[in-house]
Length: 143
Image (cartoon, rainbow, N blue to C red; front, side):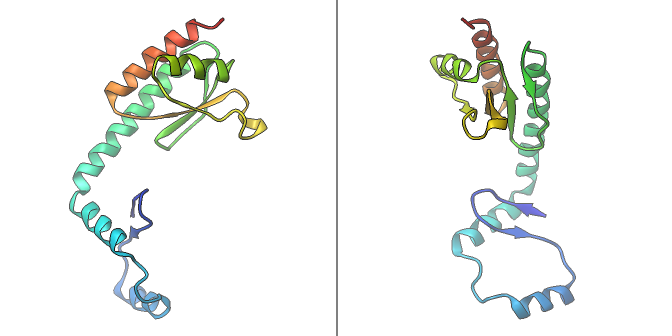
């Protein structure tokens, strides 16, 4: 199954008999033009998207390993393109990263269970390296 984040659309191989049954209850024109065009593009570029997904998985593992090695940092398990971290002072670290022009999401106030948590997006190798450098330096700058 393939899915896109920007448009709600998915494909799934199925037996024609199942498709015929689904068509009996499917409303007409249930896919808009943008979703149809996106789905067509995705199906034409599966190899490129698979390579990008493989890079993100590799980078996610690299970030998890590097961040977990930092003192006081807890990295929660993730299968997504972002990581949730618990740090000693999320608000302070957020500000220090911002001064280094690195933007992460401080989710500390979203729920009590997220106290001192930051959300970090997994990106390409170059941006992840910049993030890791800024993160380590910002941790050391703790007042």
